[in-house]
Image 1: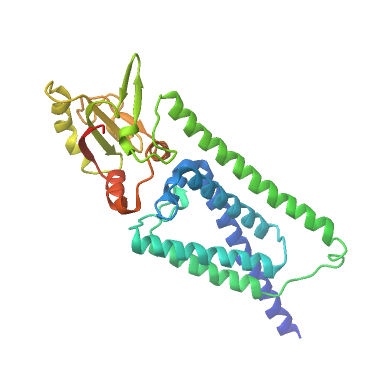
Image 2: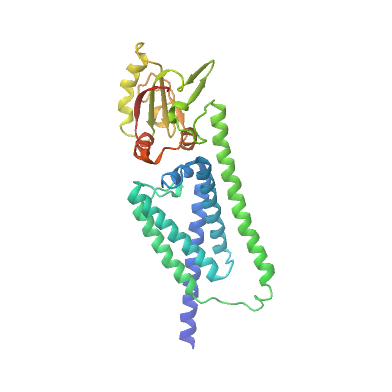
Length: 315
């Protein structure tokens, strides 16, 4: 009996350790995502399943709230094992299927599991989920210790735990909505409008305000360059863009940087650029661009990740 009791206690301890590790990972994942909800929304769009900005925002907020609620539930031992662990297992399976699909058919490079702060390739993410599934199975099957009187206190304790789960989900939703609202306000303050409501005109819908001047790409002929902060080859285009900007025979230029302008220097000293660069945060760029048609997903990806310089005439 003593040996069996020790074995049972060891399994119980192992199950509790697995439960807490999974719970902490889920909470950490939700917190890292909600810090920059807009950036996580862009990562959601990379899966190629949802493209409409409003739906992408709702999906991103839903994932953050669900992960946070499940993580808290695991940490406070809320719910029955069959329901709680079954839900966690189903979520991990669903995430793995989506990651495998986007990896195989959409060229996914970062799963976005921990927001923009911890990069993880799809392969490692699937391995991580497989390990977590094994830990869920261990925690699910491990024997649980029952303290005297726990059943009599079941209802009040259950309500308290449900309140903590709901509070965690609502708090994350509040922070996420506030971050997305900051993106929208940033765009409005910059005088930028675009095809975020499903317009098919794409970059031709961009409009910029600069002091007393207003540049509307839907009217007239312009040289439009879209650069990326993470693009290694974009810096090599600075000299050509400088020449195009100074050439009076060419139309006016509009140069924007997707992902910010930290690598380009505030005044162009780092790269020798002589043109004005309009920085875009990633979600602002996505909101201001029209959702691409399915047939042109590859070109849309090229526009997002690389650099392109085009002469565009409004039709």
